[in-house]
Image (cartoon, rainbow, N blue to C red):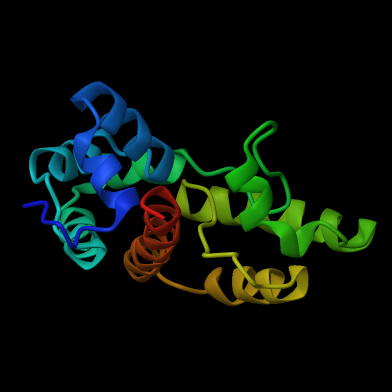
Length: 167
């Protein structure tokens, strides 16, 4: 429930019509099921209430919904054109050498071949080399382990994006 202490950005989000709120949530996470779960739980009194609901919704996503969420993310090193969030989140690759970009392309393709989805990492604050090292390490995971790591990374990304949404 919204109270006088509800931060202004969160109050604005709570006041959005369902269609606009769902569109805003889709910018955070591409899973339709995730967005709908957060939508029906409005209004949120605090950002933490929203984050907890987001975490619970993510934890409950089945394989198809998780795949939909991950499909909304471009490969590391190739931010979605015209998407400032994608560009900002992948800033660590902005000054990467041509050699590192080529290596990331090869590793991304190997990852997608192995796991069937894009390599997902909360790239905010990471260098290109750190992302490469994480990708290289995670290629050795089992599909089950990697799916859970990707879910956790998605949760971290969602929290950052939700914080920006309600700021």
